[in-house]
Amino acid sequence: MQVKLVSWNVNGIRAVSAKEDWRWFEGQDAQVVALQETKCSPDQLKPELASPAGWASWWASSTVKKGYSGVALFSKLTPLKVETELPDPAYQGEGRIIHAEYEHFHFVNGYFPNGGAEMLDAKGRHQGKFKRLDYKMGFFACFENWCESLRRTKPVVVCGDFNIAHRPIDLARPRQNELNTGFLPEERAFLDRFTSLGYVDTFRLVHGDAPDQYSWWSYRMKAREKNIGWRIDYFFVSEELKDRVADAWIEQDQYGSDHCPVGLALEL
Image (tube, rainbow, N blue to C red; front, side, top):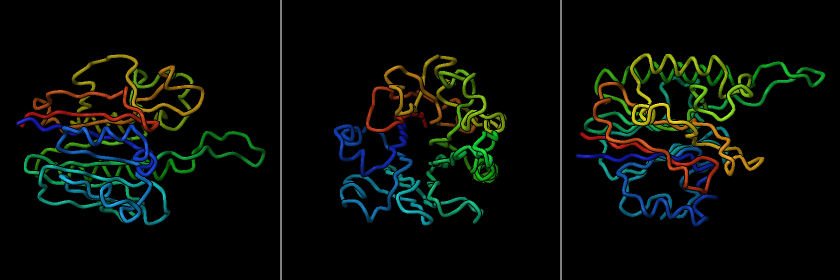
């Protein structure tokens, strides 16, 4: 049996669902659709969007700030259980995690924190520090430990917007971004450690070092038109599923957000 899973940071589901681009969902042949940065709670949506026909749906929404963060999961497979948030209360409340346990694997949909704005001194000079970087790295440490606990019972599939480009090949201008959040040494070190634990970047597994493959582009300076992007949206599988990966892809032609969808097919 082949299972198809797709993930998309929609940068506001109310905005993208009002565009023609949302026909992407109507035409889905995937069994699982994970969305990030939904920026709403389901009670703010029309019922047909919050609970589309033919799908079971779950939402994790921010309780600390309205219109912020948020993830959603739509599934045609029946999970054994669904839960939201990480186990540590320090990293709860922003609606960043949905975990669905299926028969053959744990599925985690995550919208991982951004490092935040750069901090300036009293004279407006750059300090090379970022307001949310400590929170981001703490979130990742908690997430890593939690994934390892899930993995003790069955393999793990993780998707979402990690807000990190792992290697220089994963962004168009690595040298210019070495001091910017999303490509800082400590952020990249997390993905080094995560992959060393046996979590496989499925896109690179299938496509190797294919260049110019990105999933996010700034809205400024015609970045998408010029393909000046970053690959920060991923599907990882724990290595127990490595040989089950049938395909992985990036849907660079899909518009509607500053991100595009990414996908994974597993043979189970």
